Length: 435
Image (cartoon, rainbow, N blue to C red; front, side, top):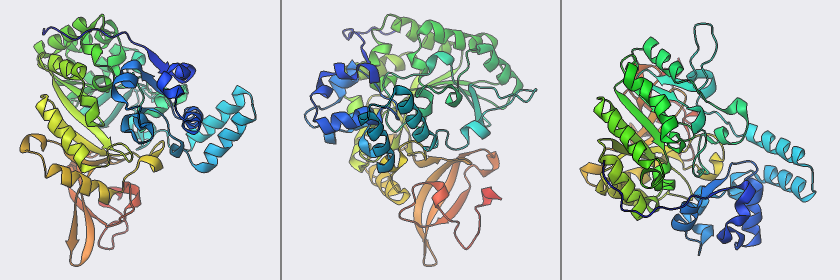
């Protein structure tokens, strides 16, 4: 186990309840301050002192990408919904009325996109849903540990925002490690388990061990890879360095690798600035020393990283730190999608320009990719076929494995931001996977 030379940092969390204690936030102009307070009643807010002190440029918060990544913005709500909530707040209506208005707005924001609730959650033999497990693709099962249902900071674009707004019916969570083992035993097609949330890295290593050790001990089914989906490297790298159980966490990583499993830290980096501190670089080095690898992914998001130079810089930095660029996602059709969405045509041009300026070591990245209901759909190109401008699309992953790597075409639409906004090419009424 490698040693850590980074000085410890005391952790302080900020939520709606103590947001006023952030001195930099309190000093903002009134209109920005009030907008964040109003929108954060609908979209969850959480941050910590590392993000606030080391990642945000408070001299220009209105244009700072990390500020917009963490602090809810007025443009994230429709003018009508914003005004309705603002009016109730100004009128001093009771908290119950404000919560009811917020819930009404949340329900209109497609809290579970791509059939997560209806199509991804498996059922047991008695026909009951197994809450806390999702199984969309044959090879990979997602597991949501009960204790991992928060993050150190919430990204305003996050498609899992419904996990964080305090509505139990919208949550995926399971507190029974044996339920995962039993499911894997019954599904030998599964080779990969992805622990997700929230963020599994927010759990103590003692609790994380309760979920992981049964896999190491019982080796259910045909599991070969264990993944942790996390934003902790970007938002609290001290988790891997100086937190009181950081050494135990690194020891657990050692044990996973020693047991013969491939260990992948699926890390979300949305902007190069998140890779720039001594702490995050030391944390990545320490993780890699266990034999794990780090794969990096993020959506393309308006106001944050909709610039090819940002992606080129981010991919090159990831490679220099020993990580693997993995995915550029298209912002999902949920939450404040109208604020963040980038048209597919523009997304393809941004990806292509960035991709053309990096070496082959960074061209492991795939994108722009839509995690849509039928599967991960890659915007593979914009082509001309007999005078018709078309999108060339391809399934990277799919509910039906026979669709994987299959090309198909859609009419070009410069305004389309998602798969359901596209029309099949060549006069077809439906795409092949809709039949």
